[in-house]
Length: 497
Ligand code: IMP
Image (cartoon, rainbow, N blue to C red; front, side, top):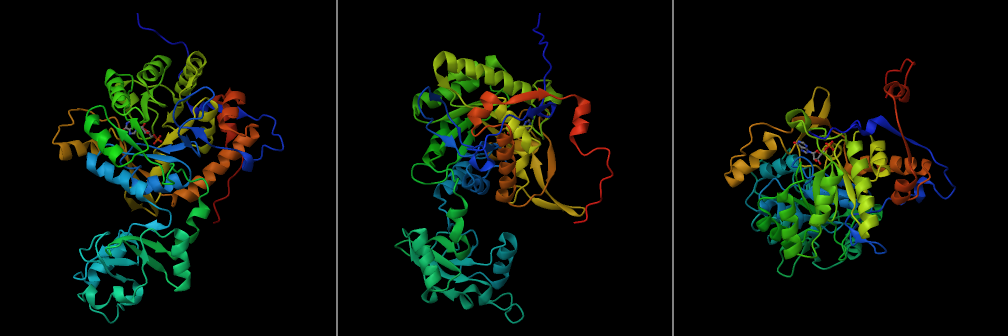
């Protein structure tokens, strides 16, 4: 007979934290949010850590290079989506690894043969008013000049005027040589009263632009997640089919960490993928998942996974539970897998970090997930709302929204049909195509979320995530007490702002 579990499958909204004694040294500012990213042995330090316990989902509508740069600057990590051709995924990884704070790879470029109309179109599309003029019109071509708003007058210049006739030519520009530091670049910017300093290599090819406004970039981001060479860190999702080609290409692009991306990780395919990586690239770190119970955790732990992702069916765009009837409430899944992880640690002396993936709706859910034993959380919907995610921003009614679609939707799966000539071969979808409210810049929103996490941890008397995991007190709430938790029995004023 099938095994029937007595225990109800529960989600985060069914729990609350009880405050513990807050000692004076446990202020929100003193809370340390760093957590291990990959497994480590007792008494040793993990070889990779996160500075905040947050990573972004392996999804087309969430994690590209732009989002990865913004999140790593705040101390978290993105896993660039694998549902794209190998080369384009590797290129996104490369862009993150090449990113240097304050040194921007120009994405608004023209050649001298372009026209004022082209310049205006690029400006409209990218929002950038500084446009580099290179011999071949690319970001790394030979620098010939720069166009800014001061080089043309719309009331006077015809739209077909050639860039060559109104750009500020190279002979009138101050340029920096590749290799100079940000502070040297800024000295030049201040000395010559520039807004932008192009950086060229020894052959005169454009490499970067340094803008005056980026001066404080490194000071604003003390938590940046960096590798040993002080480059931003980035992860990448892989699948269990083309890993023998994809993994070497991602490693060539210098990816920091991999994660096998699957809605159900309790499979022999996943074991084979992890073991292939471990035997061919023993130093490479790879996470596995997703799982929702002890058995599946142990299977991936013994397969060699460096961290394990937990969650089936809890994602905001996910319809796996409706379509296939598999999954588990996210809180129950995290609690059981964390217990299995702790037992595994007791037995083997190896600590495997757990990532709670999907279903985070409120910021306090992050703290609950951590208190229940997760080391970090993965979020999709949360990040899809920001400027830096790769999805389109559109106006609906009076407000802006961004598109957000699941990796199991036909929209996401279509890349295989177009790029690999493969049939997706699935007759039903596991994800929906949707909108989420547009919320502005990643950093502005994440700062608020992090301050709430610190404040909750301070109320729980925990200065570290480890301490929270060991000492948090969690209660189940009744459905009526959930009503009590919101504003109730008052007449709310209309917003006056
Ligand atoms: P969210 O943060 O609640 O939006 O959940 C994001 C997570 O949902 C991802 O990290 C994936 O684990 C999962 N996910 C992404 N796309 C799909 C899908 O199409 N079906 C089911 N789950 C998905």
